[in-house]
Image (cartoon, rainbow, N blue to C red; front, side, top):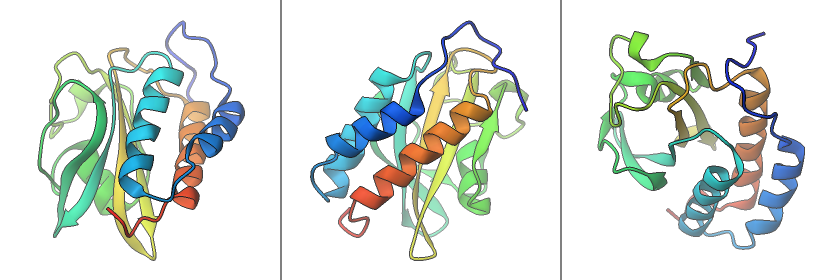
Length: 162
């Protein structure tokens, strides 16, 4: 178990999951992904970027709705933390992105990253990417909490519409 390396207060992810479920009142993927990014950016402290990358091209992620500075696009499956999440379909949690040899630096201020793949019908729909300017920002509780938020997102969204 990784301990939080910041002075941020713990986030009540159970409450956030209930709030997100109430917020996502349409099945539209574009609307829900935009709402989800804004919700996470406003509700989870210590972030400087929150957004979706979509699997719309072979072995490639393309930028979807996000909150934060302009982002890198496209991202091949062969590069970076997002590419690793797309290839493995497993959450990637990185305490210091500068220690990752093939990290794609869209914002030099980002220090840690949490990437959650979203799988639908055994295929990769896309992923949620969270960045923080704080090293070690994400711990086990954040990972489990954000994964739970993505379960709500996927359940409330028609992932075939985007």
